[in-house]
Image (cartoon, rainbow, N blue to C red; front, side, top):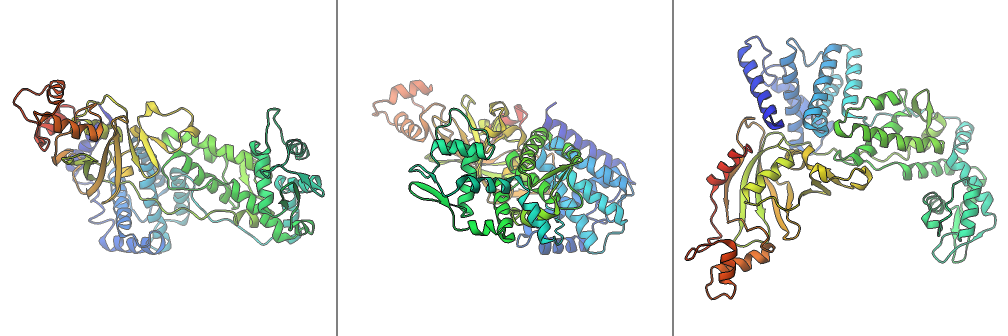
Length: 559
């Protein structure tokens, strides 16, 4: 049985169980999460979490209601405002299973609203459970979600202690070694790098490996990075022929605390990966590394055991590995410590490091839930070819590809891809094994339509046959969140005959139509014969049979 059929079977079983159980908990929309409480939660979200976005606020409220309603079905007697530790463990398991079935974004899309609801209850004095359970719940939900931005503990530090801690880091020790080595100056090339012999000498002074095949200082990742860093700090002045001590060397010599702090903050800021929306492995890594660094300045630092517990489905192992690669480098640089299995930043370094933390990224749109209505237009084709289709938000892009092949009468004999924003989605078997070489390329078989098309007006591209270049622009024209899970997908309306395969793209199709319908055209007979068009039959490029397409989708199990 396909994943989709299994999912629908589960839904039907759940509906049957609800109908047969007269003592089950009443749905939260009717009682547990009253309209008044929904309104207060929505107001809190608007003021604290999601300003100026009523659609996103409404989606948060709805997802909390649906999640807690489903959980109440499993645990009769569950109170949304007074969880027990057993409830927390059960919620954690349910949310993790959502990730296992529908992918990490679906897990995040449910966990974040539930966590926000708990925080709302506590802050609004509506929480009827114990403080211990509330704290436990936040900790467990954060593990399901992945590390979040948390408050760092920055206590006042004695200036002498802070100065000593800064100067003890490997980064600032290498600044001292560099300035000692630089002396009055060293020769540089016309491109502003140290001459090769001087670069090799500097590598020895800094105890940095240097490669025999090195042809330019600019080709050495660490030396070039350190060189640019020192230029930013104004500790080296690069002229046309020589590099000499920069204008801020006296501040370094005087061990100005502000300058030492700025020096470490500049280095850390350049080393931290940039956070982004939670859309890919790479962006997840940025958010999680920064989360570890922030918690390293708190009373509850992240441990290796915490990282081992991350649940991220297909990418969990890769995520943990990549995060640890960053952390190991930071430990080697001397500003992050590894103590008894935990990652810690000493109090003397916290004022510098905390100033280097980037602002959290904007909250990403959450995946859509419900039935999406899409207008799909084949671009650059005349007469116009378009279809209005309905598709479940949890349908994977790989399945949407199969649907579009039928809907546009393609033969699936060429490569294809989806594109939305900066990301491209292709079949999983075409992805390179090396994560670093994927850039923004994702697995279409693990990405739902609702992950990339989330609200009315959102657009994405489906490209088929890169030679002919058939571009299908998909636009969300409606999202029905109340649609029955068993409602059929398919075509609602459309116009225009889909072009033939291997016709030469939009220009070739235009040429073909002109030729086959014009007896005087020099290629009239050849092209009609090639296409198998009987004599005396004209080609009406405006026709489209909705019923025939939906019947074919039914036969293939795609509805």
